[in-house]
Length: 66
Image (cartoon, rainbow, N blue to C red; front, side):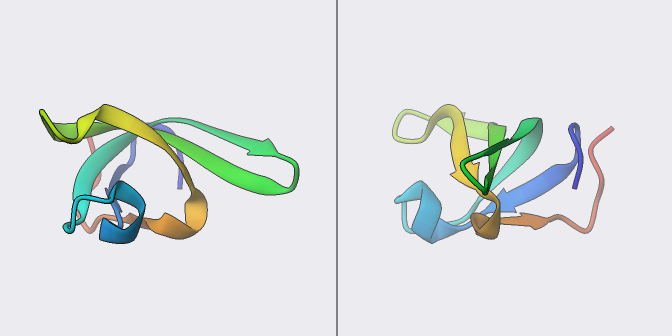
């Protein structure tokens, strides 16, 4: 996983009841946890523009971002 990759954020993490497709903006480690900051590819009124999630809630999409 690296910055610019296309990923899916789990429904559990988004709290929206469905997974969201996103692009990785930043990856950093804080207190032993890897945090991934993303921007959603299709943001909505409920989802906002993106967020920061623990890497366990992120899966790499089959298709890479360009």
